[in-house]
Length: 622
Image 1 (cartoon, rainbow, N blue to C red):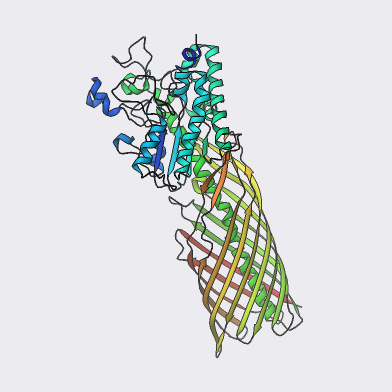
Image 2 (image 1 turned 180 degrees about the horizontal axis):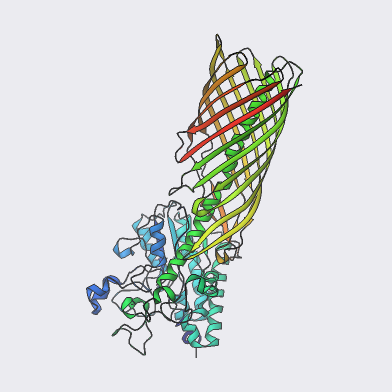
């Protein structure tokens, strides 16, 4: 028996795999899918009535799955704001059953419609969009199985390079986010299993060979894509079938649909619906819909979840470089209390201080923002000295912790150890200060929650990093009796670096997360006021703040199972550029040597963000 006859009843559409779930969704300007029957959302549906299928029945057919369940492309398109209809019904899914990569299909569709190769599908998209691909849209390409089906082993060596060329076309036209699906283990399809051990071995080899040429070809061409390792994914699902709710991983869920595929013809998923399932629950308990390896509704749903996890995971991890900014703000508030204590001491006297700070930052998740609820707790101890009439200097060490809940996406804990130097000048009403801090970051208990159908997994990891910052301020207080009031300006610079790390625990969904960085340059302008009440000084401060670093930030990743070195970039969290910060507090002396202070700070006018904190300190003069 030839390779073609043995293996590829199993390969026709390349076969299997699945999808849906994960948390926050990154925003895209549309979703466009190119490929074969594995991604076809019903391209042939308008033609089914022409071959005698009643209109009422046609409405529930057309996809290559256990109709009327959606395929992965529809689920992913809906999730990211695309139009999940086939392209001939006004949607963004150009995929069509029987399609090859760059040559016309030799197979005959059961309806009067030509089978457009992926190359033609991409041309249709580019033509309808003025020759340009929106760089903020999401694209997907999945093909190759029909090339192997119709050309045997030669299809591997011809189709994989051809697919690289088509993906390069999309990239050259402007596409930035391109999902590229490898072939699954074709030896696992019911058709290969039916063909015996030789067909299984050749099917497996075909999938491996195609994926190797495809992913290494993309890497060599320096084309960035989001690699979807359906080979590792399908094997993962089959190895853990019962956990996913499957009871059958080798048979087919669809029966015959007379008169279009009566025995001895094998059942086709294109003509599969609730009326001809082999069991009432087959759409949710079988992995495969037919012998060529098309997925059931349940399998498609799991694959959609798998795809979402590739995108939403890196997006949620962008908060790891964001949370240290609020932790540093907490530390700076503690240092400020130490600085103020030193300025009230006698010249040449050393003041020891200790301050603690607790705060909370809540980021509400939406289509572009990962949810993050963070609780900060920190403290600092240090010394300050009034070196002259105008100069005060000091140093401090501090520790802080932040517990961040990413909602359905996961969580992580951050511990920080910092060393700070600071100095202040004050002459009459004029004042200025400088603070510099360097800290080591330790990310512990890092967990990404991965939902694959009914299976919930935890991708665990740890990481390290650093945070270096400096802050300058300058202001003038006008004395109005016992009250002082005046303007101030400040500039704060931070550089956060988070080391790369590798997840474990979520099987085929594990990711390598590459190093990421966050630079912040905040300018602030405001007004402060205080009142001299003898031993006690209440004060208030308000400022408008602006982030000067407006560059988009990305988190890079690659699936652990893809060893070709392909990495991809996903947009990270980006906060508002402007906001308002307000502080009220009081400081004073319990004795000549002991001082205390307490203050409350809050951030407002920052979209989807609520942030506040309380600082308390005590000082002792020697």
